[in-house]
Amino acid sequence: MSSLPTDENLVVCARNVSKRHGSVEALNDMSLDVKRGEIVALLGPSGCGKSTFLASIAGLVRIDAGTITLGDRLVSGSGLHVAPQDRRVGLVFQDHALFPHKTVADNVGFGLHGIGRAERRERVAEMLALVRLADKGHRYPHELSGGESQRVALARALAPSPDVLLLDEPFASLDPTLRVEVRDEVRSLLHSVGSAAVLVSHDIEDALALGDRLAVIRAGRVVQVDTSERLHRYPVDEQVARMFGVYTELPVTVGPDKRAHTALGPVRDDVILHWPTGPVVLARPGSLAVATANGTSTVDDAAATGVVRTREFIGYSVRLEIALDDGLDVVVDVTTESGYVAGDRVRVSNPSLA
Ligand code: ADP
Ligand code: MG
Image 1: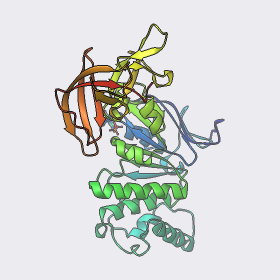
Image 2: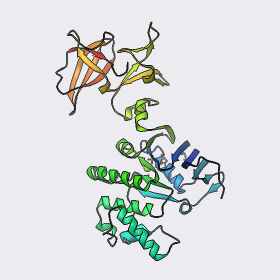
Image 3: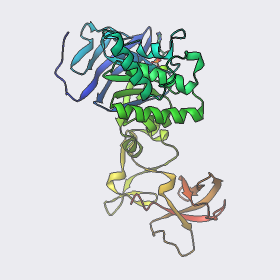
Image 4: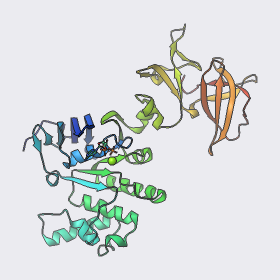
């Protein structure tokens, strides 16, 4: 078996991986690292290549170009393809894929090879306890709830102590309430065993809940990979920014004072994003302030004026859409107590960006 010199903290190291399915370029120069104990969430729309990438790591797919290293072992690429069962990866799919005619205990023990019966039984019991199913080992999959099935699938994947756990849309078949419950459980489970994991999801909530880092995938490649907070704050483009909800894009210009300005006044350098379309500042609805246009106000003089176009109650606050006099539309959240209504003349400023 070949080995590559790699960072010993990397559990998965994928470099420039490409894979074609006929005329479809499922993976196009995809690179990603997963560190020891880290959960990386792959987030992207249906068809962007998430499952193909996971299957490539698992060895279920032969890649056309690039390399995949697991720990210090090259497993894919450079003419090599290590079989899935020799990769020390655990797999969990959306549909759980439990063996219907095997008991829960036999499902969990399925991947345990090369150990004695007693040891195997012990390991199965340990895993069932871990997923809180110690008393259900004798049951069959059809006698389990959706959440329990998912826990069995997880126990089965974790039983052989894989170096990395690969989860492909593991919550997709669960109803919304159960989904949040199972998600929280999976998170604490993964953290308690300290296993590295790659989670695939098209749902940002799943990714935010579980991922230590999020990799945004588009058309078979990683567009951006970072912590959720940094992705939210420094998105590389509009599509990444939009994943985190509503915002107003404020073009940046340099004022006579040599400072960076937007329509709402001066802004700090560290909030400026250098997008392909030019420098911009993203104003999230909660980061702007509104005051009555001609009353005494705490909003500074640099603030822009405009007219409230719509007022929408969104539960925890009120969302105003404001048409600024210079033509820009901004969205601002104010407290539910504020009485602004459509037609009000207001001043808008950006205290948290200045
Ligand atoms: P995702 O998991 O992000 O939804 P996939 O990795 O399943 O995306 O698919 C990526 C692209 O490759 C899609 O266009 C899909 O139709 C295509 N594809 C995936 N698997 C196969 C296959 N076995 N044969 C042909 N095309 C495939
Ligand atoms: Mg998929």
